[in-house]
Image (tube, rainbow, N blue to C red; front, top):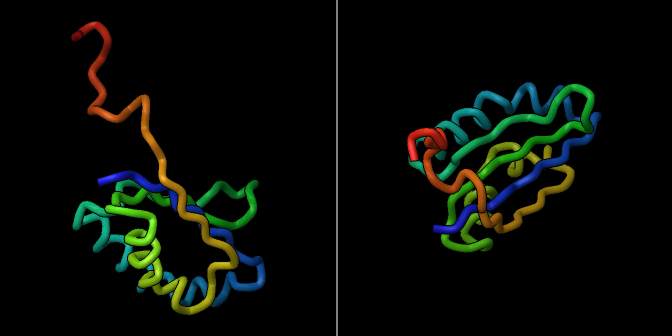
Amino acid sequence: MATFAVTYTYSHTTSGSRDAVRPSHVEFLKAQFDGGRLLKSGPFGPEEAPGALLIIAGDSKADVEALMDQDPFQQAGLIQERTVRQWNIFFGADPAVPASQN
């Protein structure tokens, strides 16, 4: 499986709607995490434009797009822009082992 970086951009005007849909969004993401597809995720910091970064394992870009189409935020039209890009991990591809143990 390849690794993909997915970014979400939200509009400031959808904050209330996102709060209402967030429980089902989190449930969806937790299911992907528990299933091994979602590797990392989280919102950008408070000084950044509203959005999030998700690191997803997938067979192809189309596979990841189809998966993320199932996100309740996407289905509710709360994502202003979504990007899906294959990410070729160079450092950190293997579990971290301190250099002193190599």
